[in-house]
Length: 67
Image 1 (cartoon, helix red, strand yellow):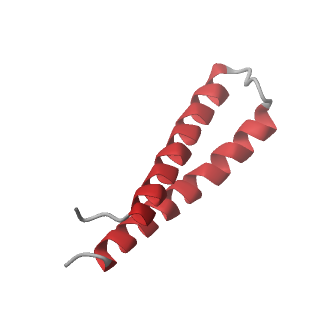
Image 2 (tube, one colour):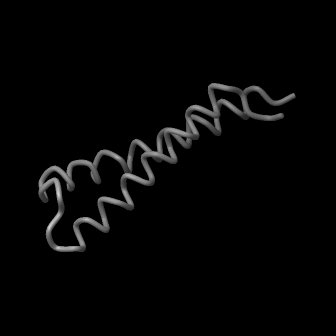
Image 3 (tube, helix red, strand yellow):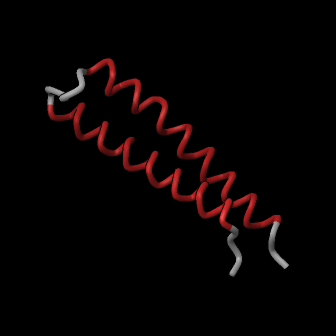
């Protein structure tokens, strides 16, 4: 196994952030987001860089723990 529990948690967080970003895009494109446009936009703007960072951190952790 290449990954560690830490890299698995980071990758899981990245997946959650990606799902939040896609959901926010769909909500904004519907025209009437349930949480309001400002909150949904904030979620979108935070989840994209967070997802990228968590994915990068998971890859770095897995690489550091390879044989």
